[in-house]
Image (cartoon, rainbow, N blue to C red; front, side, top):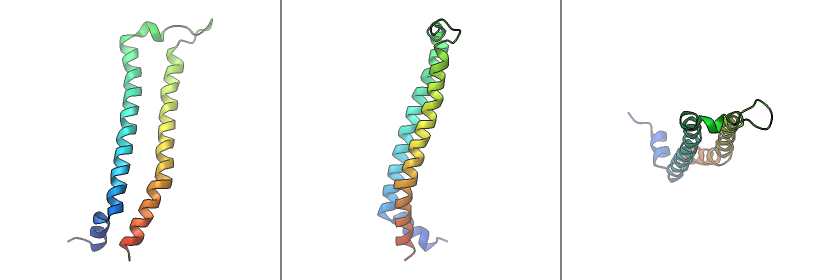
Amino acid sequence: MSDPVVDKIQSHPKYLELRSKRNSFGVLLTILMMVVYYGYIALIAFNKPFLAQPIGAGVTSLGIPIGLGVIIFTIVITGLYVRRANSEYDALTKEILKDATK
């Protein structure tokens, strides 16, 4: 048995817009994250001398700040998704629910 409210939501044009926007943005962020992460892993696998270069006169190698950059990039894109979800996606969800429960 199908719930009429669920059917109204699934056929609502703003729901289709929400799904499209959310999915395309999620796929974009996923691709970016995979490129950054696997790029770093590829550097580790195929160019260890590059990552082993010391920074200045210390013992820290170039791989450490690049690895931290990967972690910071992850935090930044997570923040971007959360900000977009809390503003744009939540607003669309409220409009859809308001229309569907009439």
